[in-house]
Length: 436
Image 1: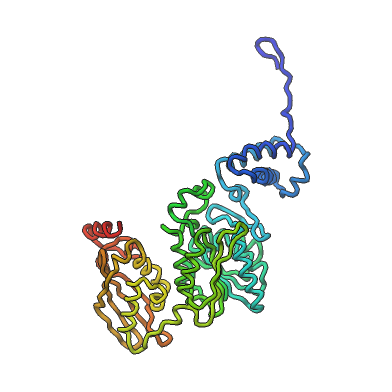
Image 2: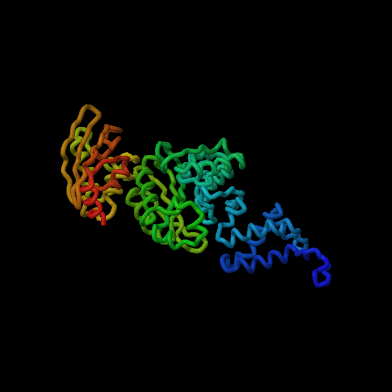
């Protein structure tokens, strides 16, 4: 090429770089966000750009990287440097030796979650025959797929409330060819899902305050609803524990992944609800609390230990109300069906619960054969009325429906929780004061 000053430049081809050189450069650029994992991440990204596996890449370290591949790699690297999770960039993550497809609609499976798979597989081997397993909050389906792929005698129900997560799970189930052993259910926890020998759950357990401090890879990219369990972080796990008595066989096993600082609290909650069960906390490879395991025994569920004379609906209503006021969830669970339990328990155990529910008045109890209706007003910082429909089931009175009549409760969030509207400006203002 001749320039206007008469000088000449000889066109040259860009100097090709080897796989090893490209990886080394990317490792240095990734070190600030990935630390010691920078090299592995660089290798995974370059292998993805080349359309080969990481092991194949390591066998080709001296090969040149062509211009097109280099440009593709730079785009992938830029996404990672912007703190997008590696698994979302390449679209997969290995879990229990299985390649699991990953996408932003579901949480990325972690190695410590494999502990749930180990527990389920050990139980399937112990039972020998068909083992009914529930994977609660299945997300990508990683746990369910790993169990089904390694335990031919297991029949798994994979439940999740998210359509996006279930779509990802369905793709993984079909790709690994375990669809004949896994049934997908869109539901809240285990509502209407039946009874199981094994229940495993990796539910959200991050608190609201901790979520704000999470690394950008988690906070800005993975689904918030799969991470945050409530103000304290444990609310959703507690809700599952409270409803599990209706879904776990008398000799069943439940395994719940928990946060590193939640083992003692959640194992204590499990012991309250399953007073005669074997409850233990298992630690991960870092020595941190990771899984609460409950091994049920005949008659261990609190729901089974509480009895009320069948001839006295009045006694059942009074016992339920006293238990709720006292915050005795084990007794309260004896009378309330799982669908209503979560909502009513949150009312009684939310902010300033002891002040809001310091007393109650039974307004009305009517009985007609095996059906009954009760109306109870709870008082404290405010007041609200709960109307319950009862049935005589297995010789004991149980709640089959519960609602808060329009206008009877001050707090709007209680109404939303039970799918109700109503209220007026004065009541709403009083509710805000009560809940401060």
